[in-house]
Image (cartoon, rainbow, N blue to C red; front, side):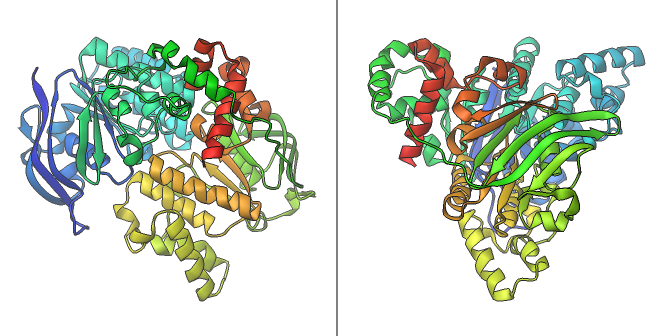
Length: 564
């Protein structure tokens, strides 16, 4: 096979840093391969991607040692235009990628650059928009879309590109579960039908493995820790050691006492030798107590018969629910269903056209955003929309300073937050050098420092590796348990919903279609279908073993919480 990407003794140090981010990289990727680059935040995987697509050294300055060749071209001796003719990229930060004034213009951008005839171009744009379910948004401004919708537009923009290498940097980060499966299917289809070389940089290992990959490159601390097959990696203990979340079905089987042998085929839950594991699962299923009762505290928030419109477009329809003190709730559903609008509405950023919202029994139309903010903290989905200060420590201290706390209190609270969110060693770093995932942690820390009564986190796990994700979630869990703080997660991450929430409120097309215990929601076929969710791999195991999926998910939840 022809080598299309070659790293030889390659190292890279950003100009703003003293130590290299990448060390002694030796890697060859061949034409037509489908490769997953995996690793914790800050491991260098996104930097490696930037070396492949030419952003390093042409957008990010630094010191290069060794060789990086793309289709035989030494990248440091070329230019970014030349490299872009061979490497197409979907960036993790989609806002940095948009160039069109409308969705249609952005999807058409590469076609216009290639002087595609207008009639053919319109046909290709329509086909791409239909594929990513954005046909109704062709005239919308990309920056006004939800995070998931932006990701769809970015995917649509590369469906008709001619580059032989396609690089996807966290392509699933903002997509709902069903659209994530569609994206993985799209990438797989492109790989098979067009013989493209596909490189995927992603945290969500189980979601990527929905379709086969040839190799997994595991990065850690700027080096290649493992270059192997999915089966070999899943059999090893390197995932947790490297701060990567295992697939749910792997964790469930390990909880049941299964020890995987050297010849196990593990990269697909549907291809597991399930009968081999039946005795372990059934024995373990009998041991766990699932009679755990959840008590509700006082009512904090009541949303009653709320409608909301953006212009003439209705995005919330007759929505009602209540939130009690100390609850842990996941707000889930398809992209564009109204989840982020609900968060903005609860914070008072927007107010309902019809209906009412009560906070501690008081109609919140009489409260200012500042007054609501003393009760409800909101961590936005895109960290770049929240970051204000140049240095990490100053960013986390900002809200405390604006609330006029004394300096000794600010210093104590900031240090506590830095340590609990794993940012203490980086406290004096400039925000500009951080990865997307690291920026996400900073924004979460800035709100957690205030310790509000209710915290809303919009996609908190997007861009987070398992190690840092667990640190943050444990911190949030401790706040919930020790201070009775109510936590609302707006999320596409079904792992998060299962592991850290008790109740799910589900949205589809602006309506609240379910409000129940999380294990009941995630085993309900109708809700899964309407809300663009997907059955977790736990459901697949349960079905193959003849166990009630609802009971099995409940069993898994109680097992995990017993382990925590």
